[in-house]
Length: 549
Image 1 (cartoon, rainbow, N blue to C red):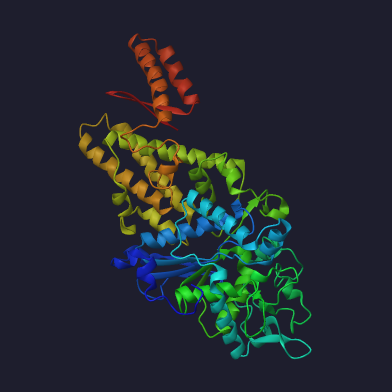
Image 2 (tube, one colour; image 1 turned 45 degrees about the vertical axis):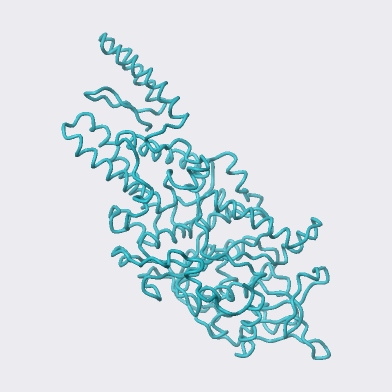
């Protein structure tokens, strides 16, 4: 993986879906997405018809993942799923930064091998992604596997006159190589640092709250890279492409290059790996808002300075806030994923993380989790009741086979509006309300077969919409992990539901006896007690049914 040759057939080797024909839905014509560089929402047109290439900055695997990290993964998982539902063939690349100052320093402090620490936490991130239903990337390259690619890219930048090698008193290369910002007049175009009358509130918020979630230094251009505080820089804005090793760096964290022994700067890896797997130009570069500057600004500059097109569109997910402040380790508010999952189901956590549009700040609180649990109760109750009424559930193949063109119009409109998840979720609950109304009518209607057909159509639409958000309770990983917490396929009840059913049925029988004896006060008391517990009673010709509010 570390050589600079392209795989013989990348698509067919790692993308089985590439063997199937592409049928892009008509709904794709209405897709509009925000672009950080243009500060505008605009119509999305892929560089290659029927295909979408996406690169998302992944984790620096220095320590355990927290909710702030995983929010970005869930946000771009939803973006990716919408492209798939629209019928596009998606190549999704998410990197792993497994060589970094923080990894080296923390490993040394803990008496660990740096690569062992990196791999340990890489597996923690992978476990978190899998547990929360984030689809695995098409390819997940590690920085350490692509040193030749980075060296080649740096050499191109030097050859094009946009970088410089620092030499010692004898004229020998020291291992420090910097990007020459002054030589690149386009620097600042991503984050609009040039004079402009335009105002981007998201960018303004990012500037006020700091350039990086893990900032450790005062250099705003490279806040986590000590090499960029070097007096050897020609300009304060210049940033490291390659860095000479620190005295404390282990021997196996150094690579030989034409410009000296060292290791890569923070930014060069993403330019090298995005080009390696997505070629000359690709559709979308994504990442957290805290990476907008300096990481992505520098990445855009060095990629273009090397002679390659940059991403056609840049998308940034906003961060998680706690009481209005950005969640980060430095604030002491970095909730680890394992600790959150210990108290909440994975479905609930994913719902909470993906409950607002990716560009909106997400306020993390106990109330957000309570609301997510309530959403799950409504979703699972409808799916289970509909399955029981129909005698079974639509198959997963039928659910996933629903095209975007067959989904409810309000859901499609919301997702096409810059992936407006809040609007899409509202469309799901509108459909659930309609489905519950149909279920309550089922026993009263003479044309019960027609109503059953409507119930099935609604159930299929609800599950297909949920699946687009990665939330179909009858899909993996929710089923195998038991994270669905109550939704069943309609043929086998969960123990929790069976116990609840027995208790409520006993109350409904007592209520029926009271009504038969014309003791309406007792009947009303039973109904009101159930209502206080969050249970709605529907009376029909064939008896009473219940549902969770």
